[in-house]
Image (cartoon, rainbow, N blue to C red; front, side, top):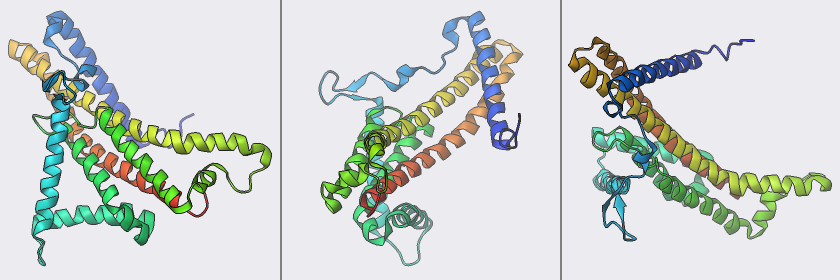
Length: 294
């Protein structure tokens, strides 16, 4: 039976988009088959495992995604250095944007979650996580780069390990090894249920947390890249292969291009949202480790 939630505008819009994309894929596939499979190149998982560009066969091997990551790191360092080296009493537009981003992370993620005292301790860590994830995600929409540097498991894994070590360190620093007892043994639970609940708490705290941090970021960025490649590959196929050869069905490329541009905007939003989610979850895990009672 249908309810109000199942007919919500967001869900209806999402379903319409999926139907239209499916139709684009089907039409493109039919014409690609008739025109020759080499004329249409859809998204491939191979794009996330590019060939080496520099130092191939050595421990310092760099591929396209690694070079993008290095570029993002350089850009972030330059932006943070230039933005903070000459702060004015009457701020410029650039300084206003810079201060807004810093204050957003400081207030909405760090202070509101950890409080003033603990927030100052972990301010650098959480700001580093937020801006790193944000910068790595936004490369998906930059012409010439066109893939999120976080769409490969290496970076989400490293960031999740950093968050994992941080919240365990915070708990041990405050409570010693009693932290593990606090994390696994819930007060007021019947003795007969303690082993079962301790196993669940262990899985939830020490296994599920880092795994979900990795998968949430990775899958969102992979899915976004695949959708963008699909839309713009279909656009190229319809316009270049079909329309330029006199087939007016190539006008479907206008629709696939419009969807592609819409997904670019969506990818920017999702990239920023995932940076926020990763940072706020890390802050929440830190707060839970520092809480007197679990």
